[in-house]
Amino acid sequence: NGIRMIGVPVDLGQEQRGVDLGPGALRYAGLSARLSGLGYIVEDVGNLPVPVRDVLGAERELRYLPSIRQVCETVYQAGRSAVTQGFMPIFMGGDHSMAVGSIGGVTDEAPAAVIWVDAHGDYNTPQSSPTGNIHGMALAALLGEGFPELVNVGRPGAKLHASDIILIGLRELDPEEKLRLRASGIKAYTMRDIDERGMAAIAHEALGRLAHRTRLHVSLDLDGLDPLEVPGVGTTAPGGITYREAQLLMEIIADSGLLRSMDIVEINPILDHSNRTAKIAVELTASAFGASIL
Ligand code: ARG
Ligand code: MN
Ligand code: MN
Ligand code: MN
Image (cartoon, rainbow, N blue to C red):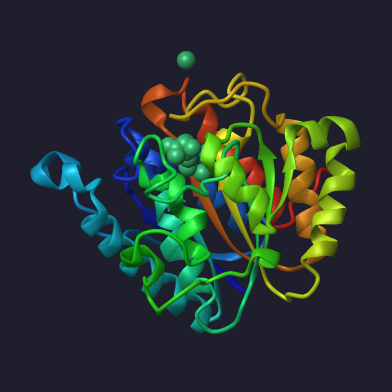
């Protein structure tokens, strides 16, 4: 079983410059070698074509929706082919808007469960979003809500049911997003849950809740971790998941044997210290794919 690394240098889903450099940061941090060291055949297919925002000009008023839709279509097809060809795709972002394509693509043939690690819900619609940034709308689009251009990427309609998704690390929601999430039926483990119950209990319970699916996708937004440990992200929220808690979560996910695909998103090397965030992301990815200490 091989792993296919797919770079998606998209920064159009938010305003901060630098997330488009995420794929390079993960490559320089040794993602490919780390995974092949675990015994996987790893193939890096390079970066998918993504328009550079500096030359998009007038699309800014549209929040780059046409370009994000096109990028997500391309990501969808790349994800779908990887699964069809028997590869486990790792999508290297880029901002979280690309998950509309990646999760769409990996669920083209058969449904999958998703563990979404994030400080945020990414559950805004264009109406509920105070910023208009599309990376904050990705999960809603996957559930069939918001811009039809995003909802219908790859195939028409919702790509996930509320019961297929678990959020972990939540601590910053917009006012209307909070009401929407409460009403959605999506299970979310907040930082309070993690503090009170511990990551081990939450990881096991999360996997139990997703047991109706035989395949798992992990969408890892690095801003879910504490910005003191992972400074290279654009939308920081204090009081996040520690490196150790994240490692434990990934190790428990690996034990399940269900992991088939992954997003690594929101790494911003411009804001980072000596590529530390990508290095930590590489270690977490290795753990998710079965690396163990002893
Ligand atoms: N909720 C905020 C918004 O809608 C922040 C979203 C952050 N999302 C992310 N993928 N980092 O703009
Ligand atoms: Mn996110
Ligand atoms: Mn986030
Ligand atoms: Mn700093």
